[in-house]
Length: 287
Image 1: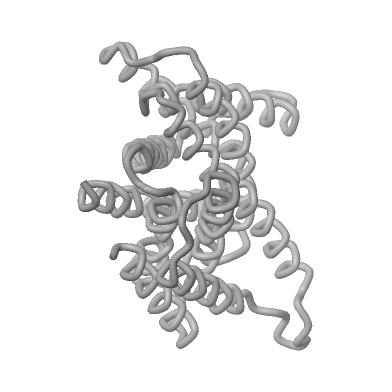
Image 2: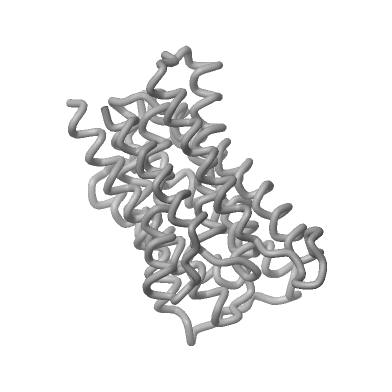
């Protein structure tokens, strides 16, 4: 049973990692974050709804409502994550964003009574070290050693995104242990995420904007997010959030490596050390 939820969490990690890379590509192409979120949500909601109808697994209840709560926090997490990617490398931004599992795990330990072990403490410490090493790669102005406004702006957005993502991970656990099925939680999230995306775009643009030229990126992001969330929730049904959420959110290992080799982002000693710490944390949490 343990091997099954660990495997599901690792697969979820890969899906989330690829979704982060797609978000970075959208930023490189100059797609505003609120417009790109619309592109992915127009695929995510129909997919979740169709799967629920085919399997007859959509049930309105407590898990569905938890999904709706997660939809609110996830929207703001992805929005600020996308904004921060417009000014930072995915091999730096994604690791910090995905370190949100420390908050998710802390909430699970505090409010759900999950056990604290030496291995978990060591894994959390390695993860935090990895995040700080990578965050240090946000460069100040060349002529000024103090952080530039751009760096401060990116850091602020990252902190907001990471906090919202940490809360989202905890809400997923609450929904998973409430007795509902995974599809109900996913649909609850999609039903609130969808209107939020359109409302935010209308407030920003005074109209709804579809960047059809890059619709394939929206489809890819939706597919990866759906796969990552589905596998994460399946794992949370039978395993502890303080183990599963950290493994899933270690997706920054995938996105950082992809960013370096595919997007030609600069490789530094601190990036390598940060990734090594992250991999060490995964190995510890997989025990």
